[in-house]
Image (cartoon, rainbow, N blue to C red; front, side, top):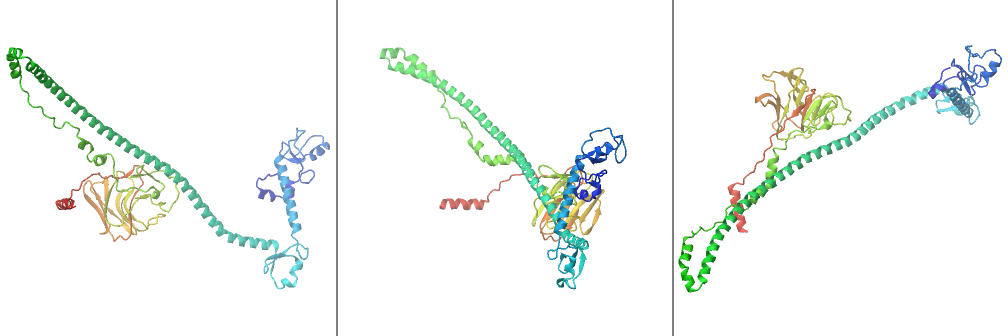
Length: 490
């Protein structure tokens, strides 16, 4: 006997499938023999009392179990079958015509309601069309199923978007944590730089203090020696002058010799530059630190937007490099490319001239260029893109719907410089190492353009940083004179 786990399969079985082979009734407390046949718990002993051996009533296999174990799964199925049969019988008993208490056997296609045979012959349903209940139910189920299909399809769309939103919500948390980590790391480096710069400048100040203090100590020591010699001579001479006349005259020669033979020292001079050079340490301090930071920080003209990156692309932590790898589980947000393995810059241009360079030291397919803001990110790019690509070992221009143009180069570029003159409608590509123009697109650009890069390489394709410089603009002499006059007029 088959045992079904699903309720629909279980209730599709006939009564014989749930009947005991001995009593032919629905199983009561069924037990199972080793041969897998089941019987009512009370039926099996009665059968065995009529037989010399404990054999299976179905297959005649000898059973050595005097108390076979209960078949709990079959018992549950039988109880469910009896409950289902009772519910069905109750429903059939209730499905009677409310007017004639007859069984509902027909369905009126005009009134769209079940009815009995007596209703069919009444005036109310004269000249109406009828169908048997089972046929009408089948037809109307199919009709409802067809009407339900668009709702089910719409439900699938909602479920897909809901799953994408859930994935997006999770990614937002991950992005926030990663971004916080990167921000803290960057500020940690800046704090370390500033702390080291502070220590260096304080150390320089302390060193200047040490040197000038030592010099001043030596100067004071020298002055003290000279002062002491003068003081001793003056004090001894003044003592002689205060003595009585006889004593004074007796010591006169010694006093004159002592005063005149003592070399008269030069006037002591103040030490020039003895004080701390505060101007050197404090003058334009923040500017000088900022100027020095250009050796520590970098500036990249194009920052890649991870929210636009194809799922196979992996961006560097500083968002200036991209490589091709295993597909990532990312939400299919509207900004993300799902066909072309490329990524856009975080900022676009709608005027002016702009340049950036990409390091393309790899052998697989890559592309650099610009894309219009309105370009659809889903599917193949049909228009609004101007790029120089390396595909299947050939350098090509890419600007759909125009066909690609293959061109040759004398030296394989290691870098590509992209120069966009939006107002003049020029987009040119250069080899900066040989200063060679590779190609120029001429087009009247009418909407914002975003730099883009695409790659199928595991090695990263990088946007090159620019050299940072700090300059001070001096005011003209005319401006200085005007400001000077205004100062004195006020």
